[in-house]
Image (cartoon, rainbow, N blue to C red; front, side, top):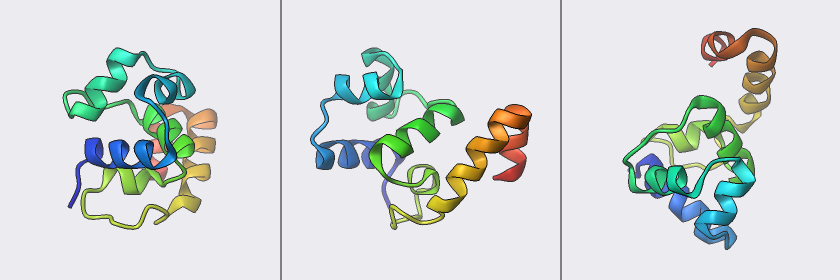
Length: 96
């Protein structure tokens, strides 16, 4: 079982992104991104969704330590994003 931080690190290095490149693509500072990869800080759900999209993995893969399939439930991510846009964070949580 891998943690969120380990999964982000593995996916980032597999794609060949530096920490600053991925942070820039996701819209977070390098400092925040470093804290995510060290496991010191947990990103907001909207940031996790952006990370998943850029890394080509599902939100479930990043957030569920028992999930080993990077594409598991990836089809749900679009619905969660739409719910967030329409109904805010609570709507996205309820849908998830």
